[in-house]
Image (cartoon, rainbow, N blue to C red; front, side, top):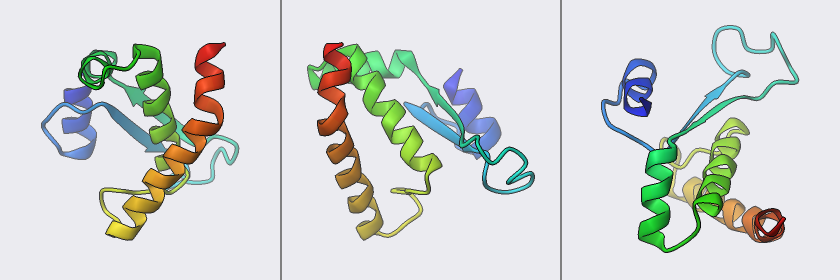
Length: 106
C-alpha cells in the first residue's frame, strides 16, 4: 500500500518506510494552521527494518514517526544539502535520546 501512495502522490514507484504530507505547504496551506499534516508509516517495512537493526518494532515506529514529524516541520534530508541532512539526523538523535527511551519504557 505505501508503494502505491509513494507512486501516486510522490511519483516514486517503490516502497518506503514513512511518508509525510504537510498541510502547511502548497495549495490550501494555512487553511488549518494548527494542523501540521499526516504521517503514513509502513508497519511491514518498520518490522523488517527493526529486525535488521536488532531493535524493537515499537522503537522503529517511534523513530519513523519522529522522522515524519521533522519533515512536517521543514527538515529535508532528500532535497536539501548534505549539511541539512546532517542537521536533521542530529535533531532526530537528540529528540530520540531525550524522549524515546522514556516513551518506549512507558
